Image (cartoon, rainbow, N blue to C red; front, side, top):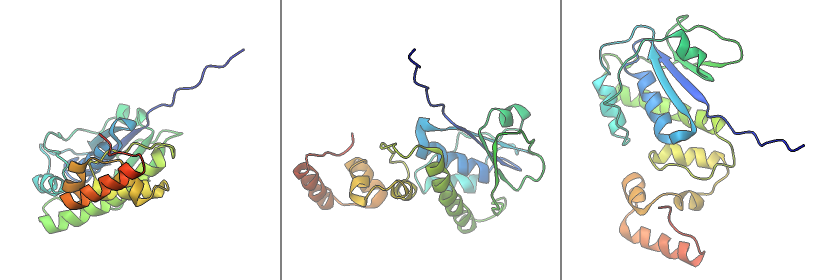
Amino acid sequence: MTTAPTTPTTPTVLFVCVHNAGRSQMAAGFLGALAGDRVDVLSAGSEPKDRINQVAVEAMAEHGIDITAAVPRILTTDAVRASDAVITMGCGDACPIFPGKRYEDWELEDPAGQGIDAVRRIRDDIEERIAALFVELTPAETSEFPAAIGSVAGRALSAHGFTRFEQLTRVSPAALARIHGVGPTAIDVLAAELDARSLAFAS
């Protein structure tokens, strides 16, 4: 009797903070951009605001991630039940606990009322944590990484054992110029080296 191969399930991650207007939205934006369809991303708040924090929107835009369409949502039991991992950020005991799920509490400063410099620091802290979370959630054999986030994708790839050269072969010339500041001369040199190795830029 032949056993049918199991189909890997896509993990769901829920980010929760008080207002669902800053920290959890930035975390959801980073993971969504980095993981693509490898991870389902949710966010919610125990006391959601009417709209997203515009300084958080500005800070994320500096990393090429648009979260302007994000809408703060109330935390529900169903959202927690549907998630494999629940990441809380200062919302206390508002999040219900279900057995068998992964729970983490990230101690992050609240960006509410903060200026852009403070929010950038919070954003960068979240970015580091998302890089580590992404590596844990995705299988080591994954080889196609989106080029939406240069620094985070680079760290995640490094954690999987990819060299810097192998990382660069997985992004397009346009992405190299936009994310890494690589100029046309450097792209031509890299393209020649790729050609010599019978490789090519990702499309």
